[in-house]
Image (cartoon, rainbow, N blue to C red; front, side, top):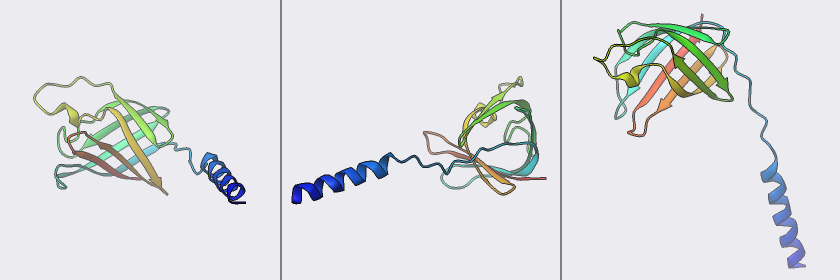
Amino acid sequence: MKQIFAFVLIWAIAITSCKKNDNSQVIKLNGTYTGTFQRKVSGTGAVSNVSLSFSAGTWNGESQVVKYPALNNGSYNINGNKISFKNESAWTAEFDWSLILNGDYDINTSGNAITITKTYSNGMLDIYKLVKQ
């Protein structure tokens, strides 16, 4: 009897762990989003007002602080809760190029608000908190 109970328990665990969680939502960006950018180093960092506009797989942006972050224009692709930016601008060499909006980020939405984040291996964290206008 114990063997049957163990078999049923293992079978139930296996079935429930194989169920696909389909709570994913399709994220579509269109329009202008404004808010803030912050690079957290050891939990703190300067904040800059930013604006990003999205249309048909392309983006352009501005920052209140020059090259913090380094925005201009490019293309993007969303897959699940990941967004990949391609920055198509030419940049000079006198600043930290990790501030260029480029590469893979996490994206989360809540109503008209989006949060875009990137965590670096050295513990830095970039956070864009934006609201659709």
